[in-house]
Length: 376
Length: 250
Image (tube, rainbow over all chains, first blue to last red; front, side, top):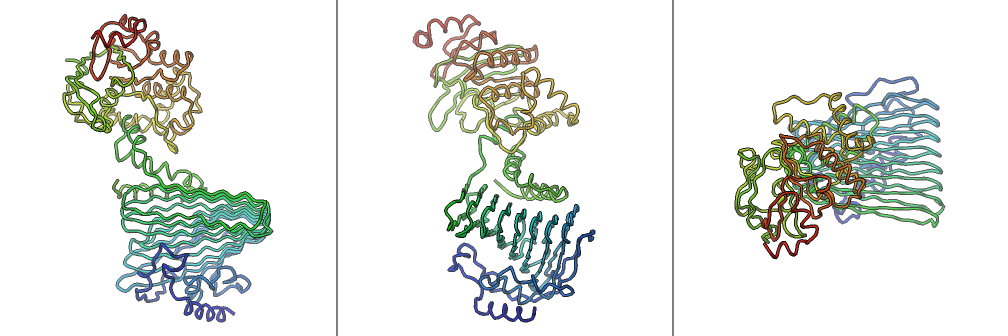
């Protein structure tokens, strides 16, 4: 069965080819650096280098050794996304996380993908499938890291969150400075399901994250994001929230910090389908631009086909407040510390929403580390 | 040697000269009031002393504690003991009052080669000073000045001053926007900090504040110059005759 899908995905990628900036979804992100590079496939990066121990109620197995036909590649559409097609055609194995019905998993389930390239550029296609049965509760942390020269990490994660489940998903991306990272997170929410995604992006030269959620009746979906780019980094966050059924709520907050010559894209699509009455959707994107050479493109994309809904969206682009810096300085706090404190304060509401203490600490360190390397 | 000596200070903002030759000497323990009409340069003087870079000093010098004040960045002025209570305290969302104050106090202590204050001692100090300012302790965990009322912001300034214990405090129109009850609390906080080792510059448009913070000296500033200096009775004179007369006869 998988072989059939694989073949179909291969054909689809052959038809689609790599996207260009003429494609609306890729208008501000050129993947020429990826399409022009000859990558060698590498065994590394296919399976995670570390997976936390299984707890009662959680089964973690290789995709190749699991009965995943009902789910795998059924959610992350490869028809219109070349990178999903490429992953689907090429992934050699991956991880299947199954959470049993009614299981409440206290400890976060952590998986780490690591890539590296020494000499030739390499490519890997990490693939994760998470199936949470009804009434279950779990936290999943995915880490993507790497070292060395140019490589492409092209990841796809599918989450099927059963009715009444409560799922927290974290993704921390700290790829190496020359890396390409393209990833799709595709989530199917059940009835009255509560799903929260936290996308935290720091690394990579060229990064594209797609987070897509399809909501059911009464489900609640939170998408949080934080991106910090400096130097020549480019990051593109595309999110789609599909209010397919009535009485669902979505809250989205993405915050970006841009330094140096970096650039970022935020595109937040909210689709409210015809019978999705009583939808409550809120989207916010805030950007802190630290340099005159940094560029941000932010765009809400609302398609509202129902009439009894509440949808709000807002985007801001701002600089550090010189009055604020002076105020801190006037109390004895040095300029660099004052500046970092204000940048940290900007990111703070995203950091505060992270419930996994170890991840929150790591994020604080990453922020401070990266801020020290930036110039005003 | 005076704690602060200002000699022939000239300063511009956006190319326009605001201070046109200020001379002023302040000794430790003294409270000087600087009064004057709007636009006379009172707030500019306060801001120049605290190091705001919107203002360009074009002439003169300021010697503080034997050092060239104008050479120092704002944070070094603070570490050396200068504190300005802002006319418009700045809101800093995302930074708690407690964290902010601890960072400030420890930066100053580090400059004095003192170790960081430990959490318990810091909290005890903060609580004592909050009581002095009749401030609600919940303000500690709120973001700096964010969503504070005008009165809360001004109290927060004096509260910070009480914690940081400066040598030279500059109060920039601390009375503006305060009702009489809040004014009394703020003035009591300021008075509690008066002492032999501490000097204060009280910048105000109105005499009212000086009923509660009684100065040793009063200076009248007009069009960028000190046009008259005297004792506390000068403030009362001003109250009766107004600035216009004083400026004309100067």
